[in-house]
Picture 1 (cartoon, rainbow, N blue to C red):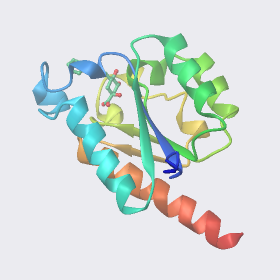
Picture 2: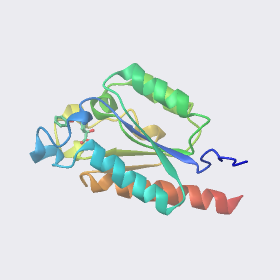
Picture 3: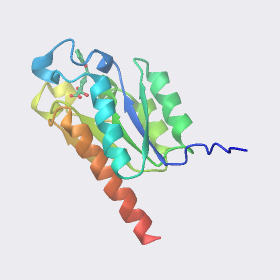
Length: 158
Ligand code: CA2
C-alpha cells in the first residue's frame, strides 16, 4: 500500500489587495512590469529555500482580504501583505490582523511616503513587524526573507 503524505511544510500567507491583479498591465512607471503571478512565484522560491510553502491570495474586496486572514489564522506561520489602497483606509483589516498571531511584513511596490499625503498613513504598520516600501517587486522577496529570519529566530528561542 502506498501512503501519500499530505504536504507538511509550514505555509506563509502572501496576501495582495485591490488592483494588484493588474500588475504588469497598467502604470508600469509606478508599479513596474512584473506581474502578480511572477511575484507569487518569486515568493514561492524564497519560501522553498527555507522549507516553507506559500498560500497566495489576491482580492479586490475588503471582506475577501479579512476572510483570507481569518482562514490563515491557524494554518499559516506568517504573512507578507500588500493591502493596496486598503492600507490607508481599512480599520477592519487592521482589526482582523490583530487577531493574526504570527509575524506580518507589510510591503509596497512604491514608496507611499513619497506620494500623496492620503497614502502616508497605514492601518497595517501598527500590526506589522517590518515594512518594505519602494523596492518594487523585489520588495516581496526582501519581505519574505525578513519573515523567514523572524520565524527562524523565534524557533531558535524555543
Ligand atoms: O505601492 C504599493 O504597493 C501600493 O500598496 C499600491 C496601491 C496603492 O494604493 C498604495 O498606496 C501603495 C495601489 C495598487 C494598484 O495596483 C495597480 C497595479 C497595476 C495597475 C494599476 C494599479
